[in-house]
Length: 427
Image (cartoon, rainbow, N blue to C red; front, side, top):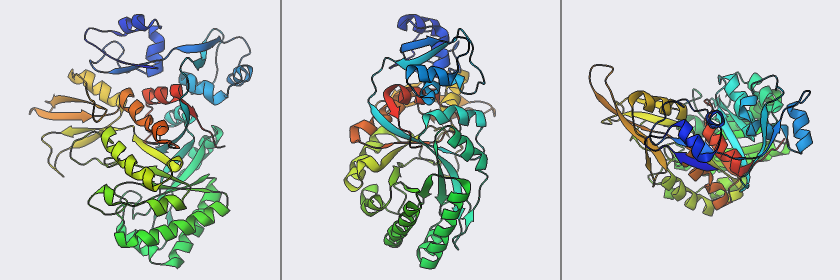
């Protein structure tokens, strides 16, 4: 795998010539939104097929997979343009394998909301080990706030991916509530009731396991939270379900993440997902979302407390567009996908720069739409930043990565992961 960074005067044709690959293949692999108007500093992933096959009459994905001794999911991962199609046609070329040697196995967990576009979901599922569906809320009494997830669960299992139910100890399925958590953790009766409700939902909906996510817990609730996780994991494991706990520097209210101690939690649950400071937050200050340097610091502390082979590293697929100068609770902030960021850079004529310490791309522009020139900065993720973050998995001996979120298909992310790692299946 080669990550090419667009240089001055380069075109998609000159890049294809440089790497001796067809133009259409590069465009298709990367799902380039701007092949005829590349942005200076934009990344393009270059992959060389090792083995290819030309479709014959009567072929199917399954028959081709059987003939070459690979899984149908691997063929779809190598040829994602086939995923949302009903037929393949004689004369088409299918990539069986790439020249890159695999670094090792990796588990992948993707987060989604129930309203995800189904074509995007189908396109992403071949790259996943688990799909976590966001999210069931919990009331102070231990009742669950249901979501419309039955169709997604069935689609997930059709692709051989394990669906994971996510609960948040919140009042409205989006905002963390210390009051809700404290109420549950203060009552063994409420905990038993909540666990009964969780088990019933897991069985009724057909989930593979549970992910419990909670933030801003009071320090006084730390030991009760561990006791609850112990009770929860014991009950669910006895029924054949796994338990994952999402942990962040905001899991407990502390002034410095180095004050955190996740040892007991890591010992109790089956897996943990570690998410760093900026994950999921669209308020300041304007920085890279989950920067390389911060993740490394967080992991250095975490692996002392939690067995690395239990850990998913949280990786965001989204970035943020910040209005400047940044004023907390005043400045407008918008989330952006990789594709949206590239399109915006084309529209405003920006040059993309790359911060080596943070391993993150960014660009500046001015918005004149209101008649007043307002400066903006956009931080997002590209192939370089994804590659740097995913390499933490073999470097630290981690179990895998958790992607927030998969609502938009991030072609370059999956090119980086699929070309270098064997994606684990648990079903």
